[in-house]
Figure 1 (cartoon, rainbow over the protein chains, first blue to last red):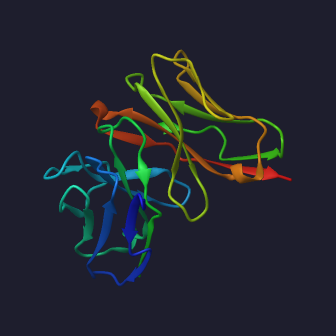
Figure 2 (figure 1 turned 30 degrees about the vertical axis):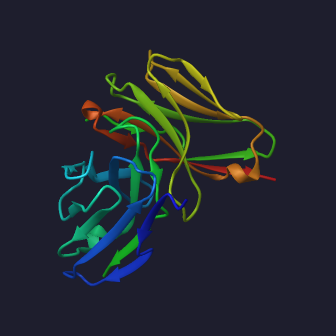
Length: 114
Length: 112
């Protein structure tokens, strides 16, 4: 049972390049989330998806797009990367509804934008 | 705006001692709180949660206390072990219940 799997684990981009972070969970959870974590700060919510087919903005959505491809997969896309998007990105899922219950996190994807 | 914060960014304790990590919250409408542990290079892991209708909840070696009067949350770790060394985050459920908001984290260092 892998839980939440993110790819890639590390990525270096140049300003203006695009990329997609992939996330998959095998726990049959309805809710999925993308957070970013900057040094010395807590996690900030970028986007979330309450269920397959729905997505909503979180605290810091600017510069990002998401796709809930199916119940298992939730991807995060940077269309034109900026140095301010250098961060560690975490995908999470929950089976108990939005904002309540345990979130299961992936190992993180460390992104550097030069 | 409303926020969750922590009093101490770094806490150093002796192995075997008890640890107390504190968290202040300012949103009186928050009704659910969680503590997460994050080890270096890993994603956060759930430790314990508590709802606002409770004052205390115990787990294995951990206890969460909620004081709604002063909007304060604490995590107590009994007999702290080297494996407890990590960054600890509190999080609260607000904004209409659609998301968890995380505090800035406290680093716990356990001295052998």
